[in-house]
Amino acid sequence: MKNSFNDLLGQLVRPKSAKPEPFVELIHGDCLVKMKDIPNNSIHLVLTDPPYFLDCLSDEWDTEKINKRKKRAGIVGGLPVGMKFDPQQGVELQKFFESVSKEVLRILVPGAFFISFSQPRLSHRMIIGAENSGFEIRDLLAWHYRNKAQFKAFSQDHFVRKMNISNLEKKDLIRQMQGRKTPQLRPQFETMMLAQKPKEGTFVENWKKWKAGLIDATRTLNGTKSPSTLMTVDKPIREKYNLHLTVKPVHLLKHLIELFTIGGQVVCDPFLGSGSTALAAIQAEPEPRSCIGIEINKEFLKIAQERLRDFNVIQGAKNA
Image 1 (tube, rainbow, N blue to C red):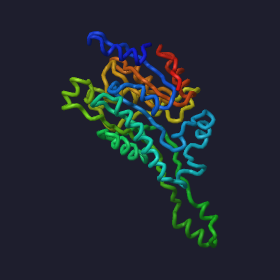
Image 2 (cartoon, rainbow, N blue to C red):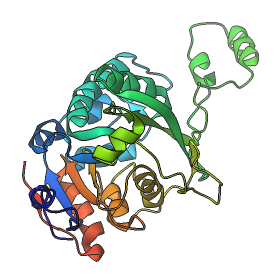
Image 3 (tube, rainbow, N blue to C red):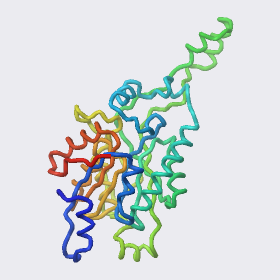
Image 4 (cartoon, rainbow, N blue to C red):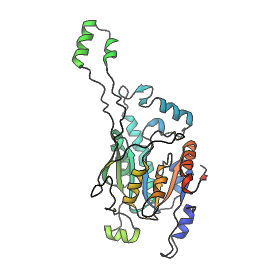
């Protein structure tokens, strides 16, 4: 699996009997810049987990800042998210995601799918951004994880005790609240936007030309009879060297790739992170898929290379 993306483009003009060899290509840089190097109508699935928050949307993704965010998970601007909620965050995310979606739309073949993970409270912004870019929104999927997640809601009693009111009033207010906490339920799922690039003609006509736009309904999870919008997969156990904060299960990504593509096709992840999408693509059944992964953070790219080492795929990464 040591072909490059340019090698694949050359293989596409060969006789249909000559099957392209799958490859993995890692690219370091800003996806808004690097996706411009990918030709129109050349990708069969974009599967990604973009940054959700404003402090992750800049290009200053150094390891020190990542570790600081890890230590203060759930904190925005120095305050718990239950205390500081900025709606402008979602607006900026929508603008950012709309720019990404326009490039994704261009590189996907007609009828191909765009799947993007999102925190539930921000999923509507990402969906609007994709729809504004020309995508058809097909569904909203959910990754359900059974692992015990942290319950981050917190009491307001200590704020009441600091109020400039009498002790009697403080006790009465605390009694009225009855231990109520900030509106943060224990998280048990993440949403996934399922968007589709408009087809050329009917489903059959589009499939005949592009081999995209239809799903493999035999691909199921957890012994179900048919593929479902609810996908229950436990959170993965990260390698000790893997510092990425939101690693997705390879098993789940593999299922999505098998559901929406066929063997030998090309998957792209514009926010590769620690490489889970690439790992899933090369393990897809019954045949592996190729993967182009773009990542702006050099440390994450090194982690992705380490994780891919056992699969004898490309270890080098193009520079920004």
